[in-house]
Length: 351
Image (tube, rainbow, N blue to C red; front, top):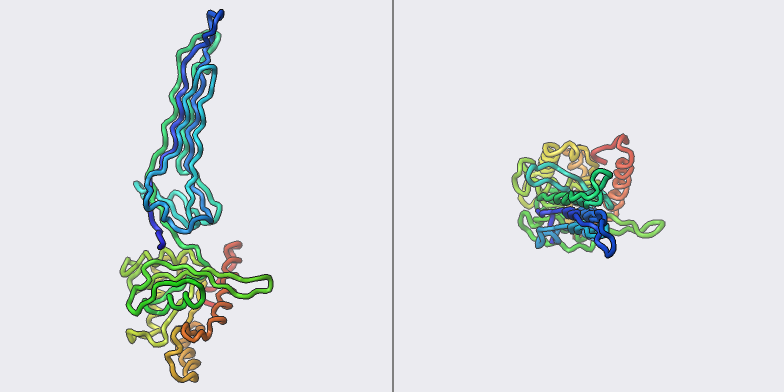
């Protein structure tokens, strides 16, 4: 189960207090101040880690508190520093201040880290306040307070390829055909209520080539305004490198494939300029429904003319076109990675 949202309270450790004490030993009548400093409170650190891929760990644990610093002691003994608390999150996690709604940090890449709550500094013992004019100071300071806040975590999938399309376009079936993923599949809208991930493997010159493919929940007209699964769909699409826009050659609701294509493109554009320019491959599915194979090429050509984009004809049932689709995905993903390394590289929204 993909848990992609959570709300937690984080609190750093408070600093330990310094102490006021004086040296007291036999035969030493006037021992000086020897109160030690308090230890520093621990930081709370967020880390994007490969060890986790959902926010499931936060569904049952809502309080994440770091260790306090220890108090100082006599004989100038320093209090113990608190052990830092590392919270491991999936790459692609957005961290918001729940009170203000402000985006604090986007842990987009593996290894990204951020100190979300800084530990309090330990207080000074009276040893720090001694001077030629104040040889018996009784002053000491308490440690700094902890930092506490409630944060909202939202996970955006980081996948190479995102499968988009109307409900019942065949995305889940395609994912199960291309990868070892086993998503729930049925013949009613919104079977996919949350994204499913799978890994497709292809032979390569230097070993297997792998693509992470995400089956994104189906989109309907008005999604940019929140209709249907709305933003639940669109916020995951933003992180995928390449989109495979899946169209049915004969939609079960008897709608027009070209109109479905333009409706989804309009929703992507309305929601985000990033989505409007994302690299995209158009695949037309369920070609096995056409009895005559000669009709396949004709139907694909007519759809290309209607939408103004090339299409890849496939069938998840027979396996036709799967190798071609994967190879094209691989090529376009590599182009997308080059663009990430050089943001000024021009790209085409459809290849």
